[in-house]
Structures are given as C-alpha cells and as structure tokens.
Length: 568
Image (tube, rainbow, N blue to C red; front, side, top):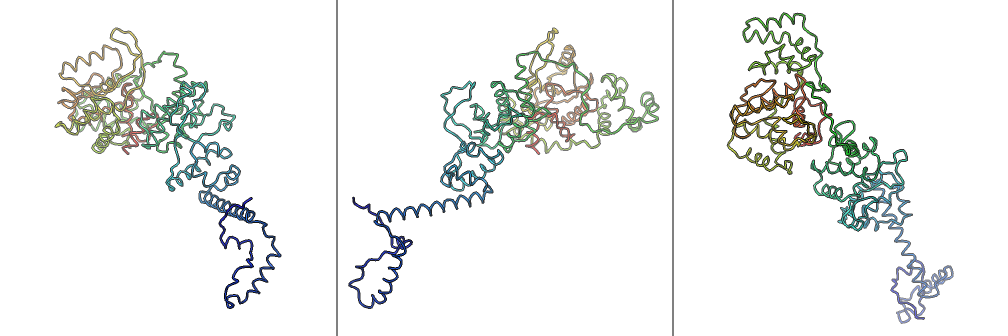
C-alpha cells in the first residue's frame, strides 16, 4: 500500500527524532565534512536510545497527535484566561465537561444559556450573560437576542405552528423553582409565552424604554398568564416578578408598578379573577379625604380665641386689624375645621371664607398649617416649559384635538393666561381616567360608567361662553344631587380664548386675574378643608399635589411617577 504523502519540515522532525541520511553530502568538499565522524557518533547514540518509527505514515500520526495536544492546551489556556478576566472562573470545569470552548462561546445564543448555566444561580447567569454580550460585541459578533421559532406553552391560545421571533430572556428551569412557591414563574417564561409580550420586549431592546401603554400591556399579560394557566399569584410572587422586570428592563422603576402595598400586577390579577362579578362598589362621597402623609403642626387653641372670633364677627375692623385678628385665632379655627362634619358647617361658622377676597384667608391658613410646602405658583414658569415638552413628544397624548391645542400653545397669539390654562387642560389627555363608578342620571337611575378625558377636563375647568351658560351648568350639577368639588370656570369660547376666570367653591365664585393663581387656591382649598379630589381628575390633582408635598407619593398612579421622572 502506498504511504500517504506528507509535508514535514526539518524542525518538526528533529523535535522528537534525529534521522540520519547516510548518503547525504557524499560529493561535498573535505572541509565541509570536517567533524562528520563526531556527528555520526552522536546520531548513533540518539538512535540507540529512541525507538524510531517504522514508516513515514507512523511518523505522521505521532506528529499529528503532538500538534493536537498542543492546540488543546492553547485553547484551554485561552478559555481559562477569558473566564478569569470575567470573574467567572468557577464555571471552567463545568464548561470542559460540556465541551464548551472559545469557539462555542463565539457562536452561542442567549436561549442556550438557561440550560448551560443550569447548575449555577440565576444571579450568576445574569452576570455571565452581561460579560458574554460585551465580549461578543467587541468581536463584531453581537449576541443574538432572538430565536427563530416559537413553541407555545400548553393551554396557550396561539397556534402550535406559529413561527416568529422569541425574546431570549434567560429563564430558570422549572425544576429549580422553589418548592415553597410552586406558582413562582420566571419573567422570561411569561415573556416567551405570548406574542404581545415578545413584541414589548423587542420594542424595549430598540428604544431602551417603555411607554405607559406598554407597561399596562405588560402588567395585563402577566396577570392573564397566571389566570389562563390556573396559577395563583400571591403577593410574594408578584413582588418577585416586579424585581425581575427591573433587572430585565433596567430603565424601569419600581414605582411604575407599585403604587400601593399590593402593586399593579397583583391588583390586576385580582380584578381578572373577580371579573365575573360586574357589580361596582361605590363608597358614599365624604367631604373628607384621608390625612395620610400630611405633616402638620400640633395645634393648640389660643386662650382668647373666642374673644377674637367675636371681634371678627361683630366689630367694624380695618383691613389690617381684620387680618391681625384672623391670624390671632388661627389655631382655634383650624381645630374646628378638623373636627367639622361638612364644609357647610365650616363656612357657616367662618363666613369670611365666602367673601370675594376669601381666597386670601385660605392662603393664610394653608401657609400656617403647611409652612414647609412647596410653591406651585413660584415654580410654574419652569414647570410649564417641561410639561409642554413632555406632552409634545413620544405620542404621550392620543387625542387629536388635544395635540392640536399643544401645537397652538407654541404658535397661537393667545394671552399667557390662556396658554397656561390650555397646557393644564391638555395634561388631562395624558392622565386618562380609568376608574369605574356608579352615577345617577337626571332621572335618578344608577349607571356604571367610566370617566372620559372630557369628564376629567370639565371637573378641573369648565368653559362657558356666557354667564348664563355658566349658571345653567352649576344648576345642572346641583340637580344631580352630588357633592360639587371646587373647580375653575372660564368665560370664553375656548380654552385658548377666554376673558374671565372664577374659582367655584360651595356656591361662591371667586374672581381671579391669573389662571395659575386660581389653580393654586383651588388646590389649597382641597387640602385645607380636607376635601376629596373629583374622581374624574384625581390623577391630575395627585400630580399637582407633588408640587407642594414632595414626600406624599404612595398613592400616585404610575403615569405620575413617569412624568415626575421625566421633568425632574
């Protein structure tokens, strides 16, 4: 059989063996052969001490084996050094066992990591994936974020033959779930189970942020996943999913998903479970709102308060004397407000609040009660610019007519009052109402309704083109038999074209020259008299509240947290 041809260099042969060619150099000069006898003697010694291969083919096999051993040693060293640089040397033995080397790491995809890193913790997997992504990007071979096929979970409504991109979020294997939390589902498993959540994650990878409607879709999808798979979502599991969301989507914040102790995911799951019961409970309206998180002074009534009160009621005082007397019995008055059962009781005892200049007394009492409160009025110029920029970008306002108003604020030749009013009016297009309530119609019949953006705007500022139209609107509200919370009225044809401004409170219309000042006093009335915000625009007033009381954020909606984060 012919010996396979091979190309062997002289250096490769003499690494292991020395081969003598007896016929070599026979025709060379005598000077060149000097010392030849000595060399031949040395070669003979090597030949006697080493068993030479019997054929060229055997020699080739030996050399190939040596070369492979050298290559394996180099590859192992590269992998060891790489893992050492990443701070993950502890996975080396596992990688060798699974035949994972540098070449494998160059071609691995995200969806492989869940199985490969199975023996290690979820935290180790996340940190390793981050290093791998960075290394692959440096090589010009970015880590693939998507698979090309999708196999739906059991009970999924999607077709089993569906084929589309799947986000390769590392998931903890089902077998590794905590026995104490059998319903604890990794976020990655939920994302990969639904085409909508896959699209959300893909969108995040491109923009590195979620819009508010996308957060809502994610929350809904998580709750629906638990419901459709007959899994119970407890508080512990919902908290865990919230933390996984923050890890998977780094620009998200906890307050976007947790506005109360239970959180939005848990609340949505509970709502789905009880969706078969369509009855909507409606607590009877109360003139009081909870005082949670409102830091106030410890109030002790003045000793001569009754005497000062009588002077205010009966004496003919000058403006300066009246204001001095008003402040002299302020503790006594605030205690009575706190203990009153209704605003009518307060206003009957202190009718000065109902004077055309009564808003001055509201301002005095509020400033005394909350000396450390912020100033919406003083900060409005900067705040207004930020709000206009926020509402005009990223399609945050969906309503076409509101978007048109936002454009006119920048271009129209309207007064500053009108532009300020239009901006706050447009903000209701961002704070879209979501609550369902029971309301009576004009005939006294009850209906379950969901407030609209228009309801929210009208609860804040009502536009009447004549004084008679304004009076008719107030009469209509009184006929409905509901509590009428403070709101602003403008006399004009549109929010960008009006002439007069009033603040309506308990049958009184306070006139104002500044729209922002009217908003300021309206808010202070809510707080001073402990009134509820109108249900239709509670999110709007919750945002305004943050401009006065920075620490009171527990009950804010997710959209408010997003807005505060953007304008801070």
